[in-house]
Length: 377
Ligand code: GN1
Ligand code: MG
Image (cartoon, rainbow, N blue to C red; front, side):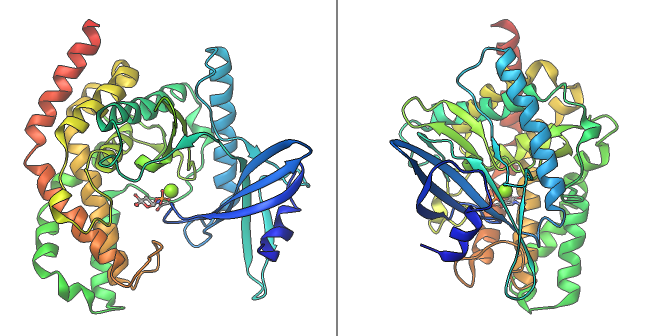
């Protein structure tokens, strides 16, 4: 067992004796470990995470947001007598803190936090190989819709901004231009046509961010609504919990909906190698929208509704910009597993973006039809 981690686990109020540490490689940002403890006959599992302090520069703020939001959700679930859904439960350190700060050999601070491990669940990186993708897409939309609904009355001013301008599409675009100018690598030369093409979409893709806080309300949003951030019950397929709450901040519902559909309905992994698989699956999209709108449909404003379809394009555009920027900057942000990982991720998002554009009209029709169905049911 990793001796350093073993030492770190002693700093938390875990129950029992540590039996196993297993690394979980799903996230692109933080490092995660599943811990198994034994207490007599009882087994307790926890999730230990090392926060990526390069990405989250204020880890205590991240944890404060998570604490506030999860306490609110817990109260709401109790009030609604909802025993199916769950939320993250923070395990405090022995000093009653949300984080343990470890000083490493180089004198740098490493931040660790822990949660109860939510067992008997599965999270998908893609729905294509799942047994019943249509139902799971519906569950995915419903899960994020319910999560937003539960937080609809949360006092938004209590939340800090954990990553500034996280979904500011214009800022993401400027970051790409800066990476090209800074020339840390010469990789921008690999994509001259794509870059010109991305520039041509700047205006349309800035529409949501330009209206945010004006005709598009600020809400409590998750901001990282990837499919694998939903834990689904292994047996029933029901979305049980929304995880990865690091980017919970004031934002737009459109960020969450757009990113959710981009991720769940794109029919492929973000680093898919079979290009034929990369397209927006309209059946999955319709199902996701249905689940989401059943929960959130009554709360959305007209402008939010008008931009639902476009948000899928914008969020795909934004992630394409981010992967390309990171590739040009020499891979400093996203974890990579091989040298051209970010390049492949960019190419896939770019392909997806082009496909989404051909389907926007149809998606907008779904939105109206689904909203009508929700009202009449
Ligand atoms: C990161 O943490 P993870 O892997 O769920 C990223 C998201 C991206 C996603 C793309 C804090 O999410 O914004 O959409 O990778 N999170 C952060 O895979 O940057
Ligand atoms: Mg994340």
